[in-house]
Length: 68
Image 1 (tube, rainbow, N blue to C red):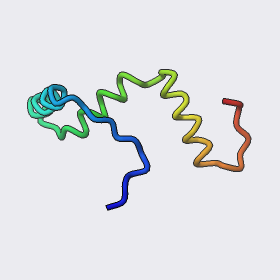
Image 2 (image 1 turned 135 degrees about the horizontal axis):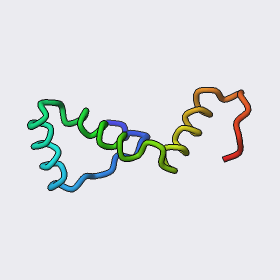
Image 3 (image 1 turned 45 degrees about the horizontal axis):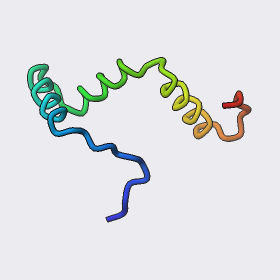
Image 4 (image 1 turned 90 degrees about the horizontal axis):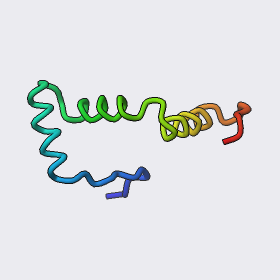
């Protein structure tokens, strides 16, 4: 099976357990819970801004972009 081109960090087993129980409590899929938690924690951060720049460049490769 080919390897993914994206980095997939390993999450500590304890945190996975926390996510599992929290998702069950909220009656939602774990993936949606993780997405909401990360989005809430990272929106507006330096990493968020850098990812937006990269995403914009990928979507519009011929458009002028401010220097990184």
